[in-house]
Length: 328
Image 1: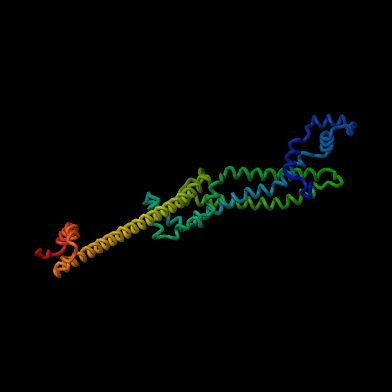
Image 2: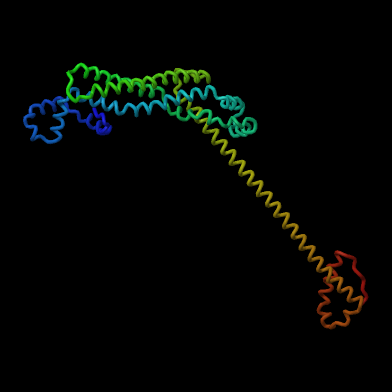
């Protein structure tokens, strides 16, 4: 009975696929005197066919090896329904969030209001952490899985009783190994059944609380609604955050552009003031030279060449200050 756990599960699966049929056993029995000349596969089948209840023993051993794995697959589903039923029934955040949601159709706007007035409500995912897992569970399929475990366990118990009624053979460990397994497995399975009963009771309570039909509502449908809502809240919250960041970036960019424009305007005015100052200085120097007569000591030809420039400067200056009348 593989007490040392040497046989892998996949090998047992193959052995179950090739259990000798009655016709094969009869044929092998006819040629048992030629055992030494048989192929290895035929000799193996012959030896296996001599084991009492060979197929039932294999099935019992295979069920034993798979039992813990199958319970480990079923139990989280039961736990998810049980925990999620409690969560949606008792969640204060969900209650607060659903109350304003009745009057507001735009989820993004709802999230904005909730963030301002009820920021803790958006920790909803922490209160409903088992909902996504429960949304994957169909009660009918779950009960079928547990039913298969129950019938498999009963089949092993039946085989154990049969083996106990047979004459004992030296080295046969079936009764010892399977008896220990049945004891442990029965406790483990009983725990799963108790959890399922509690989960179904809590689920019915949660469904009634949200005015749904208990007889027609499956966990994957019921919790699927909450799971989708949670996903929508998360997406809306993220989109709001993205929009907020984009708005802040646009405002920051607009401020920078305004500051840059203002700086350029200051620089333009500063350059203009500097140019006006330089032009005004040249004009004042010319007037001073004319009054003192120094200008007539200069080269007359140079004065003629510059007359046009001086005239232009006088004209420009006239727009900013009174013209000083000069007699040439």
